[in-house]
Length: 462
Ligand code: 5CA
Image (cartoon, rainbow, N blue to C red):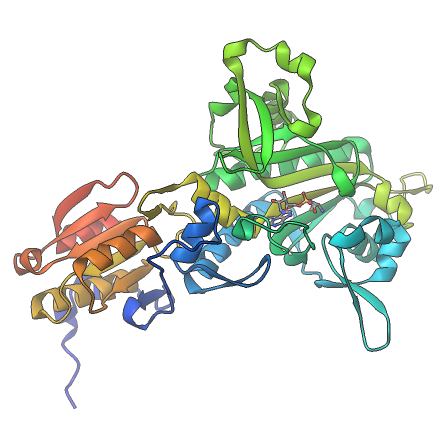
């Protein structure tokens, strides 16, 4: 057996505390099934690219399995959603996917929900359902504990799979039947309190989508089967969107939120900017208000709904018989709101907003890996050892890297790297490697730099 090399031979990076957890993967051993051909069933670009880049596989109409690279993106999206919910003071729980029908009979929605609800019978002939949303269940759970106004306000959320038996599932994960949703539910003593909770979520949503590189615009919307009379949809403009939307051009000049406002005045300051300018989906479109906007400021476009927030007062607390004792002892039905984000839909929406002819362009915050390392001549001693060295050092420093060590032509590797869309590509060819040089390419914009080994590491580890 050979003894390990002396520590100094490992170079400076090895002295750093290695993060063995930093996921790295060799493409030769990965389950990352890319497709050259465009799948015939996919009508929109995000669906095509998700199939071609090996992110998902359909298992039934509107139902998808998430493959390793796709799951990494889905988890990154969920992580950002979770961080911003926590920051806004919401607390994470996890409710089940399967619910007893009895809860929905109490709210009166069991019959109203119709064919979109997947109904199930267990072995004891009890009626169950696969949850399309959780207003009833969360009201029942929280209602059993909240006894006094001192137990309010609270905001509880979960990230859980939903099922809606959509008439026309389409566009891949955009309109699925089974899909991952973040749904939050707020309970307040007063209307004023509920409005504060609503504003907190409104602002948390702006931050959440901005962190994913998206310009999501809040718009007045129809409340549909959730109910209530105040709601905003958060819409990303995209030609392939299912919603027709109308907005004032001023809303397109975006300012990503950096601070975390908490006081009502700070929150209102932000929400007022959005609500003072016209923005509505077609169900809420008001021709008179629209015509009052100077023609050059009117933008009518298609959009994708990535989030939807609702204030519906005591609709569910009253129906489910939830009360707390108010300050003077009288029982009060809490004021409620619910706040949804389409976590799985967002993966498709991000691709709609960020791609080119060659493939996906992932924002760094959600990319399945940050770096793709391309060995253009597997078997050549110099490129192999330079790649092995870069791979180990990136890994050891916590950089997520996908190493293309397959015995494939350079053209295939370039095409797959662009298709998969990792933010950075480190390209190692035999000529450059002989002189200790590699190429660093940024996927977005395509700029390239010739760099030596240490400079490339410095840039990526930074
Ligand atoms: N209970 C409320 C808020 S928690 C609710 O269910 N709202 S919702 O119906 O508007 O759904 C919330 C979000 O889930 C939507 O904004 C959308 O982004 C996503 N969503 C809804 N239906 C689907 C679907 N069929 N496929 C993928 N995502 C969906």
